[in-house]
Figure 1 (tube, rainbow, N blue to C red):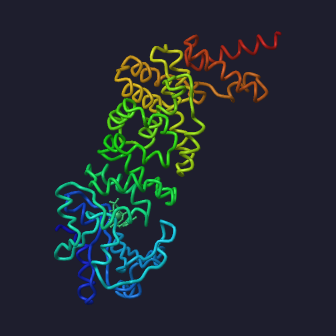
Figure 2 (figure 1 turned 90 degrees about the horizontal axis):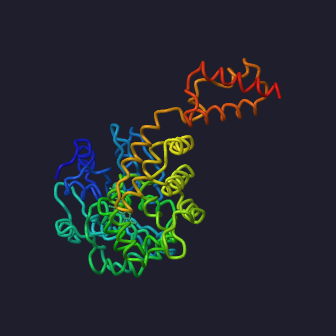
Figure 3 (figure 1 turned 120 degrees about the vertical axis):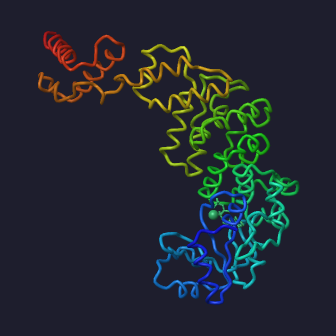
Length: 415
Ligand code: ATP
Ligand code: MG
């Protein structure tokens, strides 16, 4: 199995000290799938203290030390080394009550979530749970009894969907049954970790299949989805559309919330929005205010009238970024299976014009020089000039604007 040179060196350091160490988890899985691993995790028989002695002189990250994890910055790369462990008695479906260090690779691997994540490598592959078989068959299967494993840690339910989406693997029958039976266990996990897994799920190439088959699991942490979950036709529509949207978390989330946002009395109605609840649910999942605002804006803009003229388009461009409007148009196109190329061209064409206060060819200082004196007057005048620019009554030219501002002032003082 291919390993980067520095990772090989780390394993050799352990081997030379006669301490067992293995590459485990995602790195083995991804390498076997010919994908580039995000990071390398090492499991070892050595205690954290022994690990730190072995790598004396290197910088450590010790935030996970209580779980037996020593992060090492080894010649510019970061690896996490975790002492073999066995977790016993979960007390809140989330945290193991006690962690005992065991010098046994198999026990360490048996606590891992899925067979494809329970592989280890050092010179040869260690596969106690038929992970390679499942990798070849493209199957996500829990290690051990899925119902129990999901009850121990509810995040695993969502991780199953995440791996299924990202790797485009099917979920084995018993594991799938347990996902539905234990879906509510997800809520015992921290919102932050739910969001991290969900983000990866949203960007996966298997997103459509997950939406189609497992929407009721997502509803556990985004209850707004309830409004269309039993409407097979709608679910199918959104599922098909979402994979065609660029792999961007906010746009995909807006697509997912499109129906709940416009839904009222069983029909889709562009005039009615249910934004407050959606905002609350997304904020609860710890999406940043910036992202919640962006998703709200995209949703708001999906109500756009495809027939708007240049003036109305520029009014929108005064408040919203061109790309945000285009994302909303894309959602509408995918949802309605329509193409609004005229609208898109109109947005792009008008986006290079002056649509915002900070793009006007004069500023407050120019107005002060003309004799304007109070700040609310300055703002009001600039707003007025902008509206004239947007409605093509005047060009965004310094000379023209100064003349016009002078005219306005004269008219005002003459009154
Ligand atoms: P990624 O490529 O996204 O990093 P990964 O498989 O490495 O995927 P991590 O979350 O980094 O996933 O976890 C590393 C390994 O730890 C997993 O491969 C798995 O063996 C184990 N693991 C992680 N989370 C859990 C969990 N909730 N329950 C059981 N084992 C887990
Ligand atoms: Mg990882």
